[in-house]
Image 1: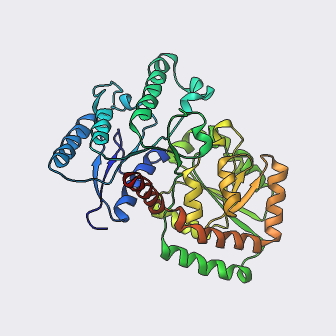
Image 2: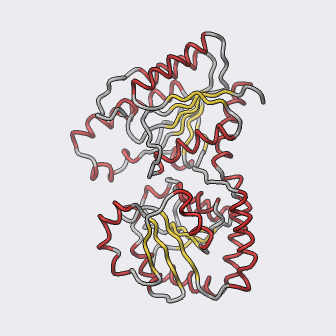
Image 3: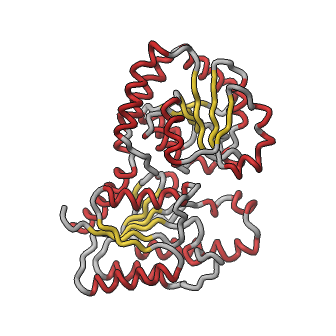
Length: 377
């Protein structure tokens, strides 16, 4: 296990405090590789910063330094457009580096993040003149991946059906924060819930509140049942833009907060159930939300809409409930759970049991095992 080294590549600059999955995931994976024992050489930032890091790594390779693998996280934009001004000033930088690593026997795995651009919703949200440039460059990325990657990681197998059949796909969903001390405290609370709790439920939701993340129907159902309490955590800027859709639901049982990171732990501790209840869209058939795994790793069972890939995970691992997207079915589920709290407790225990296998560290270990196995072969 001595001298484990890898290269971590991200073709963009990421904030130290990212607020979306596309920024959160790379930093979580980077830390996870370090946590499982890797000395990580990082290629990240703007083109100038990446070029300097690449030059340093190439010097090490020429001196005989060995790297177990290269792992990359793609951008939601085409690789050539990731500069701040979206001008492709470094068109050859990243893929030539991949080729250099490949020629030096370093196995390459890349997580392909997003195929939003393949769907009609992309046309609705991106101007035509921008699409004329971006779509050919998305396709260019895929052609390069076909030639350079040993493994293309995707959020779900359904996701891969929209991509090149020639790539070697492995599923690598998001992970969650595995905190043993937190889970011990959660377990103590769960064990005492049977005696302490009334038939009320505390529900926690973290995420967006508009578009694909509209939760107005969820709020409507909670408002109709006096036994339900809902805390919504969203970004302040989202609330400023969309509060008019939600103000009619606010009351002493439905509140909105704007917290992040460790500030959320007290809410996870108090939550009985978390929500991933959205309208069915084709995008939901394969998009695996980061929040699903955060909920599970914090020991909070999840309500997910039937027909989504998130619901498949929830059902397979028995960490929540699948419900059709209509108010009657959701309301019926809440009535059942209020009257059968032992079922909620059992799902909590299931979440706690599968937390370690779905942590960011588990995802990093999977990548390490996959790519090292290819090296052996």
